[in-house]
Image (cartoon, rainbow, N blue to C red; front, top):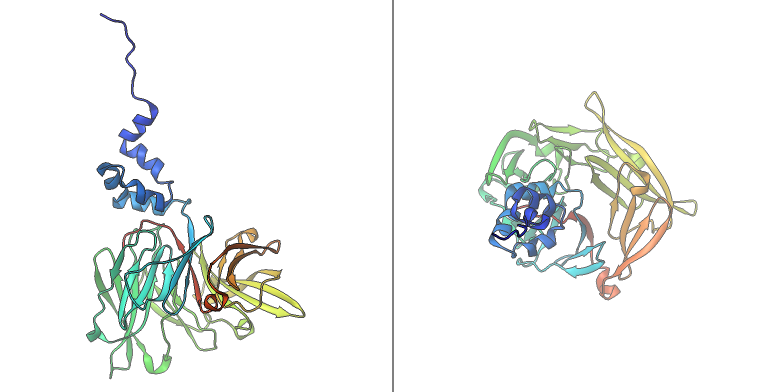
Length: 356
């Protein structure tokens, strides 16, 4: 008999043949590459499309960030790493951007159709909104990939002639609406709930006037009115203002022009032991960015060095690092300046495989 050496499987073969090892590697691959990897084999497609893998991937710290810029009926996307500025080709006509939340988007098309859309995968889902339950006074998308693969949509309704607002929550896991059985007097609030922001198991509707703001705790289902949640008049809008959520914290950022210098101020919302809220000044940067920005996005965090602003100027995307004042052109849009100026809003999305 021959004395040949029998070789065992190589390290690569071992990984490829073991689902757990393969999943441990693929979870660090960008979402757009994973969409192409699904064509390798039926086994890879099944693994990448599984809820278990999608949840693990959504919790990865290697998710790439894209920014969505929207106009009256056109939506563009650009990636800060690839520096590509491209239109989003949607299946819906007359699309309006309502909100973006951790990789998913809430869109409106036609007159009363609302869609949850994943710009990375191209998947969409029309929300089952029943007109008989009342007129919509607001919708808000709540999605945290670190906690669940599924999202919620909060709907505020008012059915005439009843003077109360009702609150319902759509659960993507079941595809059903849940009525919270809570009423808010519409005659006393006259508040439109279209600009909510999700953070740490709650949705905040924050008023920049002395009138009350509102908070919905998604764990307990409790809906509260709060005067301390509103932005105090001393910090009210005097330049460009934006609310952002970062790592479970809610921040208010302002740009102001004082005594010949532009300042970028950051306040953090803190919930006090008595249940009230307070806006506490966290950072103050002197910077060269314009005091009033038509549209922009702020990247923030616990570290002062993490704060930067991305905004549009002429027909370019510009990034300003606030800690040292460094300003760089990220990319050119390729659009004429007179067309570029009609873009109105900017949102951040994470490139994720999250199902809709």
